[in-house]
Length: 175
Image (cartoon, rainbow, N blue to C red; front, top):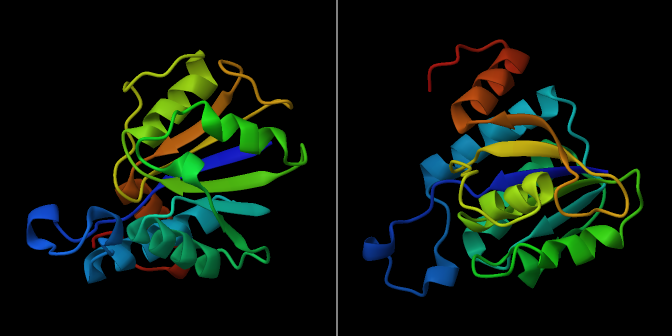
């Protein structure tokens, strides 16, 4: 199983947002950069069979952009296991229920996604693996997925993903 952890894009600033934190949307720039990063995922031949998203608005918007960009045919599932304060181990229970040949795109938040990566790669939760906004990593998992048995295939910053995506379209990698 391939598990792609994808952090949401740039969202409205907390101190400038009048609504609840859960409702903070992506900014226009954030949405654009997510689309560019998703083009990079496409260039890496990421073909998700399952899309899981945190219920927070900025994560759902990120997942929808990736869903369109990657031309994913399955529906997106909103799961509490990707909430910022969820235990990193809770996501494993969802992964256990998926077919071994799955490619799962998980859209969420920091430090949660970094701690999920830490559990999958090292067997324990640690904040040592931070993902930048619109950054992603691919971890190959054996089935059943067990802590500490993941294999890191790649870990890319948003600028690296955008550069890959722009190469696909033949554009400069500046923006």
